Image 1 (tube, rainbow, N blue to C red):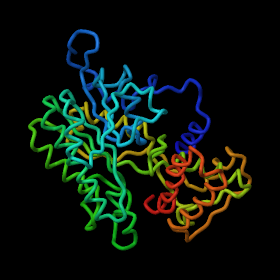
Image 2 (cartoon, rainbow, N blue to C red):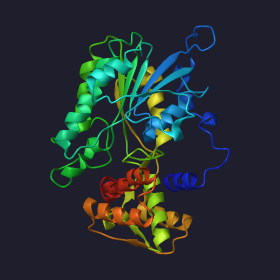
Image 3 (cartoon, rainbow, N blue to C red):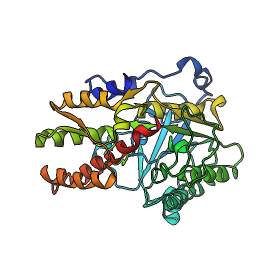
Image 4 (cartoon, rainbow, N blue to C red):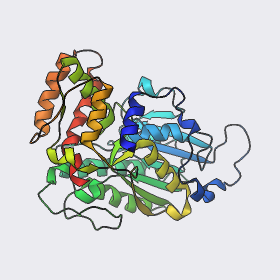
Length: 370
């Protein structure tokens, strides 16, 4: 199963694994992308210029490594990356011009991004979490609008805006689960919006409004499921969360307890590999027939958490596996604090571990939309 293979690759990466040597998916359908116009001569010339907003996130990190590759369609690519935090040491080798910027501040966004007149493609792969969905709509709409208002007017050659949302487009926000009737799977991209607050809808509306102000700019929306990839800075970083959680259980001699419900444990689930999501987003940017559309994206395989859990336990040498039901986010949070303390939670690495382990709340609900 693809999900299990991804977990094994993450835990035991082969020495030869390199995204610069990857083969492109749907290569036979990328004929239009490969027929590039002649790039201007001279060293350091680029055909396309990407702005990745959320460059240290799971998919942002994949985009930052894939776009500069010599075989990437639409290239050669120059890449800017925007994130709120200072550039982390694990990101230093990415060939990206890094810009630290808080895009929730319009003045700061305009000041720090005012020189990006050469941007041709915007990849918006970030989000902010607040206490409720109404606040999520407010802050995420503000951030995206600030970014577009700062860049779209000055980027004279802007061609495409890529927006990443997700499966909550069809099932609604976590806080509203069971409080309204969501769509039933399988989900198609043309399903109507749910009658509930959803910051994904806010982001789409902002994009449609701002893109319409500039003639010739196209867009695409990408809706992955739970994403398997790498980034210590993402609250949705399930793979690293699982690894940290398993290490804690091994350290304490405790069983590997599944933090979700029995329904999630037994039902079928799907996942989206971060590299695959990034590749689809790049494809949609350079393929004319993909423009102005929304796309679901997952690995095309199904798995059960109870199968993945056994693989995880074996990788960390944990003999006992158990499942608990009826646990909520607050219970997980309290257990996280206790477990981090047992590993020395006051160390210099504690903030990163905190981010990683707290993504475990996603497992509580991940099985309900499979």
